[in-house]
Amino acid sequence: MPLDLALLEKVRHHPSGKITARCPACAEDGGDRTGNHLAVFTDERFACAACPGDGEHRQRIHTIAGIKADFQPDPTQRRQYHARRATARRHKLEADRLADTARKYRQELVECYAWKLPDLWDDSPQRIDCDRVGTCPRHFLATLLPPHSILWTGEVHHSGKPEHAAHWRTCDEWLHAGDPIGPMTTPATWKTGIHSRSGDNVASAPFTVLDFDGFDGIKPRTGDEHRAHLRASLALTRWLREFLHWQLAAILHTGGKSLHVWFHNPGPIALDSLRHTSAPLGIDAGLIGRPEHPCRLPGQIHAGTGRSSRVLWLQNPASAAP
Image (tube, rainbow, N blue to C red; front, top):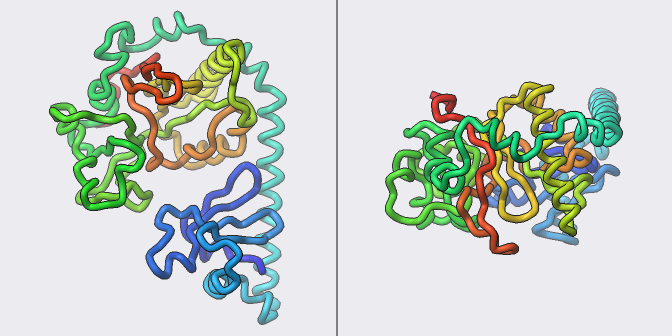
């Protein structure tokens, strides 16, 4: 009972081949606004995470978004269906090829584009050896975004209720606010008058944030693995910047075991290509092209380690978007 992806909302292709989207049955009642209930697997099976094992719910999904040719044979629909499947297979083969190439050459990239911490600090347009640049969340936001931009900051759960509206303010308002800021923000600017951090409320995505969490999704455990992970993350950041000419905005150590690297948005084609190679390059695919996703601000204590997040590299304010 395959689904027609063209009839689904918020479709996202994952490196594993799985597809997630907004469940059309949930959407009828205004549900699944984040678009992550429906999973479509590589063998065309599908399921709703909100209603597991509910046959009537599955039937409703197929009634709304199913390929009707399965029940009402039509030569034109069947040809279109097979053409879409052939295109999907080609895209999957290309994605696998890109991932295999990234996995084959990643160590060579790490060695060729090595970026040692002293060199990184010297290269930073702003000196990061002062607290204002290294740990001040307000300075961080003011550097990256214009004063009139509407930003969200807060805890991950500060979204979805009218009382959360105070977590959306202009950059200038956050700069002069007397109450606490953070610990999280997003690489998005937002529409006015909202209280939900959903993709539909994003006004613009000036940045994309890469979360380096370990090659092939394997997180570093020992001290030696963590140091090797940091070296690899910085080298791949330098490769993206110097070889692929992505415009670097900031590098932040989260206080845990990962880096958050802010790039000016390189565009959908570049992001789609990176999404296919994210796992072998040690990048969390979940943040790529998801400007509504929270990421850590500097000067925030990591709950797991007790260490503070800190800026390692930061662009000049003059290079921020007008």
